[in-house]
Every structure is written in C-alpha cells, then in structure tokens.
Image (cartoon, rainbow, N blue to C red; front, side, top):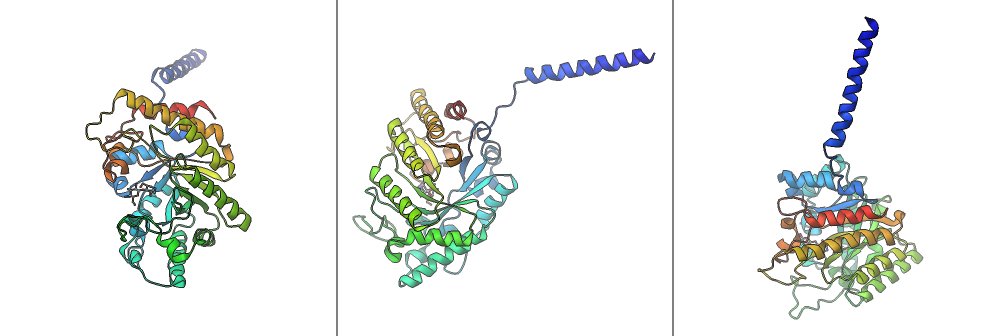
Length: 371
Ligand code: 9MR
C-alpha cells in the first residue's frame, strides 16, 4: 500500500515536471528587452507628462530601457523659470519614477545656448562678468545638488562649439535677436573658459556624478571633433573633471558607415566614456516632404543604419568605456523631428502606437551580434 502510494506521487510529480518543461518550450519564450540583449545601458529621452498620462509610453520605457534622460524638463526654461524660483516638479516626477523602477538617470543639460531652452529673464539678463558667473554657479549648484544621489551623470555643457570647431559665441543670424540667437550667451558673458568652470562647479556639487560634454554633428564636422579632442586633452592636463563625451547622433540615411565609424572612434580615443546620447535616424533626410511614404526600402536602409551603429559601438568602444546608447524618445509621434522640426518622418524604434517597428528588430540584431 505504502509503496503504491509513493509510486503514484512519483509518477504525478514526474508528469507535472515533464509537462512544465514541455510548456516552457511550447509557449514561445518572451522576447528579451533591448537592455537585456545589450552589453551596455539602453536609454531613452523622456517626457514626464507622457510618462504620467500614457500607459503605452510608460510600459515601453519600463520594459525596454534601463536608462532615462529628461528630454527638456531639466533645461533652464523648465527648471529655473524665474531668477529666484526653481521648478523641479516635472523633472522630479521622471527622476523619482526612474529611481523607483531601477533605471539609471542621465541629466540633461546644465548649460545650453538654444533660445527655446532659456527663460526670458536669462535672455534679457544684464550684468557684469561676476554677476553672470554667480548666475551660472548658483544654477549648477542648485540643480546638481537637488538631484545628488539620484542623477548619476550630467550633460554639463551642450553644443558649445561651431561647425568649424571655434567656440560658439556671436549670434551669426542675418537679423540677430534674442529669439534667434545661434551664438552663446554663456561664452559672450563668461569668457571662453566657462566650460571648464561649469564642470568644476558640477563636480563640487556632486563629486560622484559623471560629467559629460554633449555635441551634435560629430559625423559631419571633423573640425568640431578635432576641437572636442583638443578640449578633452586640455581638461585632462588641467585636471578639470570630465568623464565622458556625448555624441547626439541625430543621423539620416546619408550618414555613411565611414563617418559613423570615425565619429565613434574619435570619441573612444579620448579614453573617456562614450555615450550615444540622442539617437534617431531620419528617413526624410531633413527635407520637408508631406508626401513622403515610409516604404519598405526606406525601412530597410534605416534598419541597416541602426544595426550598424549598435555593432560599431561595441566593436570600437571597450566595455568599460560604454556608457550606453540613448534614443531620443519612444514612438515616432513623440519625436522632436515630427513635433519640433515639423518633418514627416519615422525616426525611432516604435511607431506612434508604441508597437515595435521593423527597425527595432534590426537594431536588436545589432545589439546581439557582438558582446
Ligand atoms: O527634443 C527636444 C525638444 O523636445 C525640445 O523642444 C528642444 C528645445 O528644448 O530640444 C530638443 O532636444 C535637443 C537636445 O536637448 C539637445 N540636442 C538637440 C536636441 C534636438 O533639438
């Protein structure tokens, strides 16, 4: 009787075990998320309002990415709207959500010249060198201090150089005004060494934060790349605390493999961390074309570009220098290319309903192929 009882128990247990094994292989294993197949963090530029309001948006970020960057909410215009008032609410929402969900937070950005990103009071601010220095220093101390321990890294200075590698300073617009200023209020009012001081202030405010210089056009502007390399060497010599370089990579289908390789490689050669910080691949090639169709051919070319970037980043950048690849928002409908540039385009990995696109899979293949 006893033996029979044990026999039944054993047979049932065996059957259950076999069945569960069978089910495991029978039901397709869930796809791994991007960050799970990559050998480095996969980030996304986020809008906290969308994060709060759209479950689809939130879900994709939650599952696919393990690093986030606030797309605009930490810029001066959002976070420091009046001389003596900071407004942290929106950025805090994103940062707290990210921390609670185990995501790394990359801060963006402490100094940028772009008029849309600056509050009116600052664009109109009048003061001598010392007054400007105080404004910059207090802002950096306050913002970095506020996020100490939560924001792991910062784009300290963004886009400080012209295409020819000179420091962005004067407004070169044909009819210059504060609203079309393509020069820099920082360089004009603080002098040419302001970048180094910004890094020092940020470091003092949070010595553990990793500090980045972020730029665009490294694939197209070799003189700008040379200037960045020179700046890094100068900072190292002077012991200015810089940890990494951000390559924005707002690319189009004309970005050749050779140009992409050169850009990544020059950043890697500085020995600093390399962050592809704002990736998107435009199929419109920056042309306004309301009739453009997202044809299979365009999708194929775009997919090849994404895949190549994923592979090349891993091939060229040693593991310890890989800070990650950050995508500049989630779905095509959220992209600055469609919303801000007003171009008909499909530059991201997800469609406007947050479904994975074909390029998503091409990119994931690239992430998988080398380790
Ligand atoms: O994508 C951002 C867009 O939503 C904002 O309106 C704009 C102005 O703040 O900035 C865009 O992001 C820029 C980033 O901060 C710096 N590199 C270029 C990005 C595209 O303009």
